Image (spheres, one colour):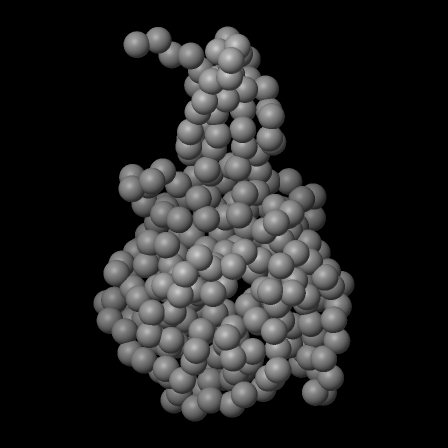
Length: 289
């Protein structure tokens, strides 16, 4: 066996052209490299591949990039670190959403049916909840976790022992769940609603008539919503809805077995700004509301 090249973890496929040149793709970085002896040439540059959910950890943005988790410094925009998944081998898994849990990061994967707790300082998974019913997003809620489950259309409480208690299953497609006041704020993509849910499971529809709401964020008393099918980011304040940004529409689900959000259109607020993922442009945008 002869080693032709040493490349980064997360390689996917390779092919030869009619000149016997080798081209290698990466599912973790979204890149295509041409291998030529000891040299490699970028045909398609690597980096953000399929950005989904976002979280703010200290001075950085953490991005669930499906086959990787990446962190970018908010001030200088440089990549702090990247963790790459290896199919069926890495404890990281394929993650579609992210949230903050004190000094840790909550990672959610409907691909793997898991919620995991990541220590971003050392890249270790410190706890993993397996066999969930197609989780789309997760948030810290009191002493447990609130998880949006596509499989039974519920917001459920995930306990430390892995057990689940349904808080409410009066949803069509619960998508993004975040802490809000003394309860939770939830986007229901198919119903076009943003809903407040109390710790006892009582629901209050705050916003209706939206088109495919996915990522949600709050600054002061204003709620912001990222619509997956239109790419519009809207602000809702005093019952007035305004479009504040236009990004790319997200990818549609391939079947009803998958969450309609597919690659989660992430939105997070930090120090008066919004940060939003654009899967089609493989980019993160900073937005002044």
